[in-house]
Image 1 (cartoon, rainbow, N blue to C red):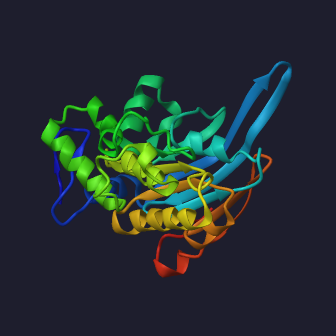
Image 2: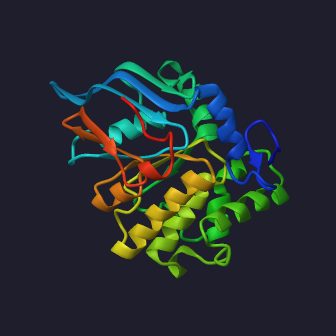
Image 3: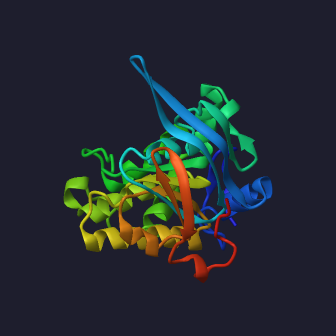
Length: 271
């Protein structure tokens, strides 16, 4: 089991691996429910018009589950992801992560909560080109009180977890697209977040690299006890997740088992 370096960051190592202590704490807090949306609506104003991005959505995501949110463009997928990550606020309804009602938090509280619990993975990687893979992954840790040696422990563990222990000194231009996304995933897990939220993580990859990234996310969920919420258009993703949630025009229309649901008991969400 890892040890706590400070109140925010887990130093990984020992038998627990990345995320086990945080996941166990989160399980105790959330009774095996990572995310619960209850009658959530999100509306935006555009001139005189009201746009209803989400309309009375209720769903539950289990801890340590890997779920995909799917639907056509404009269905509200990214809006839902932003609400789960605490990036956006619901207009009405409740968003509970663990046992924390994040819809009642102010911006300062949300920022601290995101730093501890959320890892973000983007479609276009968002790596800084003048930094090495190691330095890109280290960036979130520079905001903590960890020593240089402790940061190195985290970064090395994260890069090893994504299969890039031998690419620490490579710059983004020296990596393939799939490797760049692996670095981005390492950056997302280096602070040991409870939940990974991934917005179209395979959208800029070829078919082979996309499947490798989906398999990596599955392994992170299984081996490192991560809850992963992914927005995607990629139909291949259905084979790698536990549950698929479908949205259309801001309405939650269905959920169904993914290809991994029968391989691990207790990870299929109920709504």
